Every structure is written in C-alpha cells, then in structure tokens.
Length: 261
View (cartoon, helix red, strand yellow):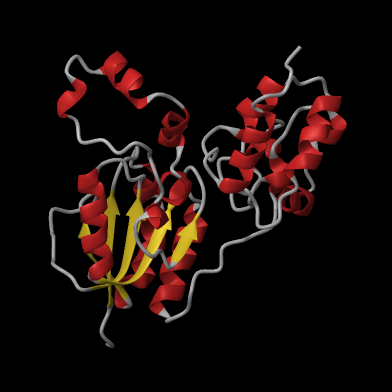
C-alpha cells in the first residue's frame, strides 16, 4: 500500500459543526482509509501527531493574537491548507461584531474584559495566512468534504461549485419561492452546494454559503424593494452568516445611509 496522506483538522472560533460534518460521513470514510490518515483530529481522537501535514483543514474564525500565531504555525507545517465553513472563509457570524464598538460589546458580556486577548475584528483564515482552497457553508455539505478528501488522496485539487443556489433549485425541479410566492430569497446571489435545502422545503435561502462566483446583489436589492422590503430589512438579509464576504459587505455599506421610511 502506498504512503497515506497525513491529514490534520484544527478548530478556531466556531461551533464545531464543520468538523461534525466530516464525522457525519460515517461509513463513507472507510474506503478512504487506504489513502488518507487523520493524524490530528481532536474531535475524533486524543491522538496527536506533529507535522508536517500533507493536508490541514481549518474550521473557525480568527479572533485573538493567539489564534493568529497558532494558524501561522499550522501554515508552516502544512502542504495544502483548506479553510472550511463560513467562519473560516469569511469570518462567520462572529464577524457581525466587526461593525460595532468592541469595547462596548466586551463590557456587556464580561465584568473584567481588560485581560482579554481579542483582535479588533473577527476574520477569516485568509486574512492572516495563505489559504490554498476554501469550502463555503454553515456548515459545508458533507458531499463536498468527502470530495475534498477523495481528490486530495488522488493528488487533485478541490472543485467547489461557483454557481448560485438557483441552479440547484432548477435542477431539482423546485418552484422558485421568490417568483411564485414573493418570498425574499437570497438564492440568486448565494453559492450552490447545499442542495437548495431551504427552498426545497418552501423556505427562502438565507445565504449561509456566501456569495456565488458572479453575484448580482444590486439586481436582488431592486427585487426586494419591489416586494416592499425596507433598506434595513434588506441589510439584515445580506448582513448575516456570510455578511463579511466582500460582495455582501459592499451591498450592506451601500444601503447603510438609505432612507428606511
């Protein structure tokens, strides 16, 4: 048997949901055992082997100087670094604090916040080190994670989708909730990969996979206005789980001074 790929999985500020998606693959992981070996995955085992690692998978946003230094050490001992999930790729829900006053937020939560080692903003891994590939989602789709490992074992790069959720809806034959019911859905500007889970259940997409490769948020904003949404309501839809993604943040900033009357 050829030498197996040494894979490490690391957590930063997150809910652990992205790592759990790897575990949710269950028996689908078994055929990979001949090509892939998890040598550092604390969600699974206390076994910890030092680098170098062929592939490191990082979950969670970077919010402290200690996080930065740890991420840099991981980068130094890793051949290919992949960030998975909204937190690691765009900052996630934690990045909502980037728009507020940090000191005021800390004072609301901690009685003595002066000893906390907190960066001014919550950021994706790519803000501090070179990230080779990213898989979006909150959490990522298990099938994409499996494909990541399979392709890594074969020496190929990941190939995440870049089209919008609308493509998945059309392929599955789902009725468009935006067109047929006037539900303000973020699917037209959101990256595919979830299988159009929410629209399949008659609900609107809320953009947990972040922007697609070629979104048109201005057109969606106009459509939302036609549906009667105020600027504040539109901002809230763009400024969510993946609100720190540049395409969404520009849209929120452009609407910041708009009249909500």
